[in-house]
Amino acid sequence: MKKSANKFKTSNKETSYVHLGSLLVVSGPSGSGKTTLCRRATEAGLCQYSISCTTRDPRPGEEDGRDYHFLSMPEFERRVAQGEFLEHALVHGNRYGTLKADIVNMLCKGINVVMDIDVQGADQVRSCDNETIKQAYADLFIHVPLKELEARLCNRETDSEEIIRQRLNNAAGEMARLTSYEFLLVSADRETDYTRFSALLTTLSLRTKLIDSKTL
Ligand code: 5GP
Image 1 (cartoon, rainbow, N blue to C red):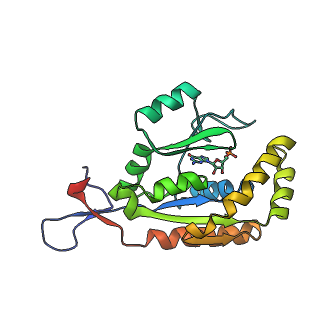
Image 2 (image 1 turned 180 degrees about the vertical axis):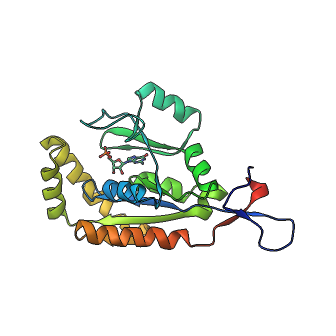
């Protein structure tokens, strides 16, 4: 492995350690603002946004490789069969997944990573047996009351009425899972949410997450 800023020794002994980046898994119902928070923290240089793969169609303004890797169903299935995904799930009728190699590479370089994924994907990452991911892992659930959520989804005008209904129906199930998460952010307003979110990222990056460089 190349010598880098996050590689160091804790004593004069031979063992050298790599200080891993943090992996923050962020879940919450559609409309909770999790993507906006993750993107803003990425722009501020606090972390790197994990770009997922999906089989859904791009929304207006979305770009391949920036918002998602937009894959055909056969291509998505090929990658599942190759074992390339750290996690993958069917969400709102479309398939979504995170490429394992992308995440591990960033963590080993000391980069903090945020993953904006649903509750099924979070379960898979939480129980994964990869040592780097286990060391780096933390999770956050963003909660929004259902009435407020409905107002937000209608206001953003990106989805049809049918899709909004489907997302609201799923929201109750997702919210029932919030006790599985270590951190909980009850959404208030945009600025308050971001202040809390960025404080969490900063705190997580200060955890001692050392891994023996020989194991990488
Ligand atoms: P959207 O279609 O609105 O971008 O995302 C719909 C849902 O899919 C959101 O709850 C989002 O967090 C989730 N999602 C996005 N990427 C992934 C992924 O890679 N894995 C999983 N499990 N869920 C994802």
